[in-house]
Image (cartoon, rainbow, N blue to C red; front, side, top):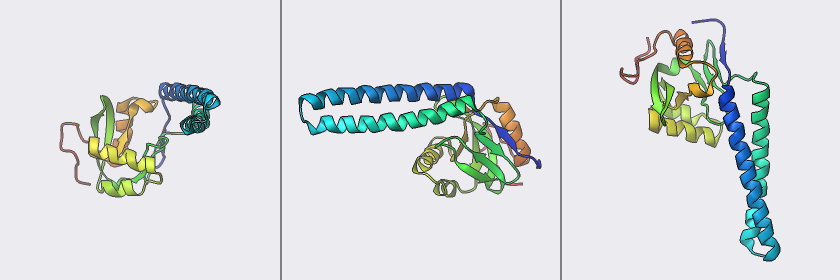
Length: 191
């Protein structure tokens, strides 16, 4: 097992896509707020006031998220995946499964998730990995990964500025060669 950690950084295309999506959501919320405000001016309908309130909150929330994404775009110094002597840490905002120890990993395999090529990291106790996630969104994402791929730990090479083969090779170095072919059984016993 290597002594040094290996960091993988976000794909600029992925960050740019996130920035454009968030910009579209800010514009959508702003338009809804304006329409709700116009409706609230002509009638005192509670629904119009609710639309204005929720849309204004949406503008604020999505603007804040957009600023975080723009910072990531301008200063790509935060890794989205770190491999070290203890385990892997998936830093993907809100969707990564945070830290998984190598003692929990039973194998790594290639899989498909919504027509995307991903690397599935099989673990001994998927429910324990889901339970220790700090946020509700991370728990939902990990549970959805179990249902769709069979493991909560799914690395999306499209979000990482590296080829899938490079990520798989780095994982195999740390996992000790327990990288499993996608056609092989789902997990392999720990050596």
